[in-house]
Image (cartoon, rainbow, N blue to C red; front, side, top):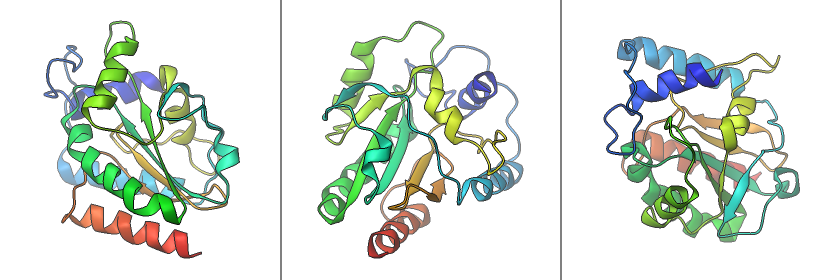
Length: 204
């Protein structure tokens, strides 16, 4: 599955900058087709309970266990270096963390390494600092956690067409909302929907 996800990542972030993969990007599906694929994938994940994450190299926090965050609403966003969608979304994540953590939201960032070259911890650490991510972040080796979460209720693989996915889990650890990938900034419908979902889940 990682090979397929990497192909999609290349298509989505092919012009992401010097840290982006250099392999040839595959043909990108028309926007309407991609949106429908994302919609179907998101619908398939809603209501599922993802497994424990397999995360390493925690920053801004001691190592966290997903199971021990039950009782909190949990937002998990995958991000990487050289990705314009990730840097553009960072301010929204910081704002959600600042505004909602006192009310019971936990924002978690998961770094996924896309390059063909070996993972470089300093790139991960420096990018987190560049994005000013002060909430807990961790490294998702070999995309193990991302791949295990991109599943439907029967355990079948699904794909939104992106790797920069955001999951919103309720207090029982169930996926209740998924932003399929790309960016969201204040003033956009996707950002407003995330805020509304956070408010709703915190009130439950």
